[in-house]
Amino acid sequence: MSVVIVNPSSAGGSTGETWPQIASDLRSHFGSFRAVFTAHRGDAATLASEAAHKGAKLIIACGGDGTISEVANGILASGKDAELGILPSGTGGDFRRTLEIPSRTRDAARVLRTGRSVRIDVGRVSYTDQKGSDATRYFVGVASCGMSTKVIERVKGDEVSFVSALLKTAMRNAPVRLVVQLDDSHERHLLVSNLCIANARYFGGGMKIAPDAKLTDGKFDVISIGDLSAMKIFTSAPRVYTGSHLSMPEVSHTLARKITVRAADRAEEVPLEVDGELPGRLPATFQIVPDALRVRVNTQI
Image (cartoon, rainbow, N blue to C red):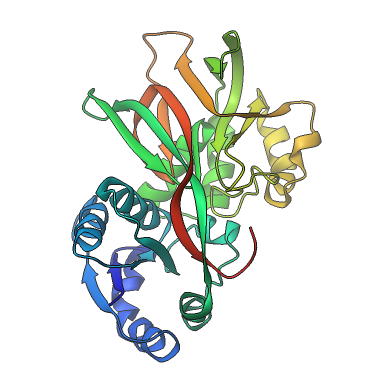
């Protein structure tokens, strides 16, 4: 039987409140399942790993991007070939946008029933966690540093929208100096508003940050946004949502399989964002893991 891992706290707690209706729609349009609920951060990864070890073939994440990422991490950590399914019920919805999975429960449930399995790449990042220890985790969407981490802090702390958080952050944003190495090239010193390591196309609640990213090409799309004024951020924001920002002179785009990033000032703490969460800080090393995870989708990606 398929297992649904439900994060009742996602979407500001509305997932828990509306779960009876979500479950009814899922049962009607998908079929039978077993539901388990998270209680704390990290539970989804543990529950997914346990489900995979017990033989679950399809493990469905019901929540936002953070829940999806945790479930993916649990499946990958288990070493089993379980398939990831997505039942969107969160704030951002960025990964499901890349997979073109509908946001309505009944439509997403039909994808779970009739969709097909595609094997996708994932990212693996090694970094310094919040306690100062070395840590490693996987990500399915986008990892970043710079302005995006402050936006995430506002969204989670003040429960404001991504757009509102972006505008508020832009008013006080300062660029960050980084040292970046792509594959085996020489290190480069960059002054950036934001640096994104993208496996998928969207982040930040619908920003099409990497419009050319493919989940099956064995490479990251590396997007560097240079030092922008607050006014330039305001006027350029619509281009980021439509994916037309790559032509801007302040934006660079390249492909790489391995990226190392550190603060130019080794004493400076630069936070790291991974799949919409803030697990730690730089220095970090990002590596692509090709064909690592099976995901149920409804379209060719």
